[in-house]
Length: 170
Image (cartoon, rainbow, N blue to C red):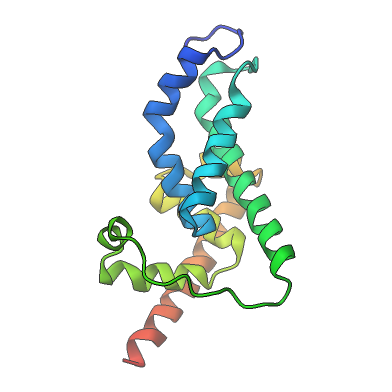
């Protein structure tokens, strides 16, 4: 996008959508663990950009990432409220496309990732899945760079413990 301060048009949005939708859906899927919800969150983020005049049009991808993370948080909050204390229902086997993506060695990491608190999971997903820098993560989550570093460190330690315990019980 150019450095002009004009509303985001449908053509620009279509180009952004083509370039960034898949990466944002993957990121959202790791945060909400349900494909339809992840896609809804991403579509809502793109819809929120249409017609908006952004102070820095070059930062629209960062805006979209932040909108997706916040949308995932809202989705999880609504889900938690709806469920109360009822445990989640097993939805059965994953579709073939998801099974291909989730090779056996990755399932263990994803299961361990699900045990982390939301903030730690968000930091790790943004860092290692989306490849964001500490500064970009801090901006996306609205926290300091030091908080990103310490949260990532604690999250990696927790993941290592969970994976070690899982491997020892085999």
